Image: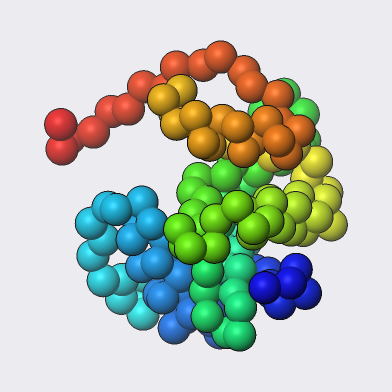
Length: 151
């Protein structure tokens, strides 16, 4: 595989089937349960200007993906991008696909006037920590609290 073989693009409403396959692939990489998403839900999600779904594909087949959300700030009239998920199929990891996804998000964000991108990573996930450091990310110590009626 050559870098030119990898296509990275932001998915739109017209990419419903690709989004469905991408999100299922990402759940598989994370080994998490995922329920089928309806056309209505996917259409609404992909139509949102503040939701970003990037798909890395080779020969039209998704091999990696990234989802992010635009967050408006209140201290200035600016926005930041929050990477929620990034996943690459295991057989394609360590081949620059994750790097390409993050670079594409940063580039597309910059075109929209967004210069800050951030991502949380579990302290135990040393692979993710090493990856984000290799991209030039600066770690910031934080603790994330989750509130859920499911727990």
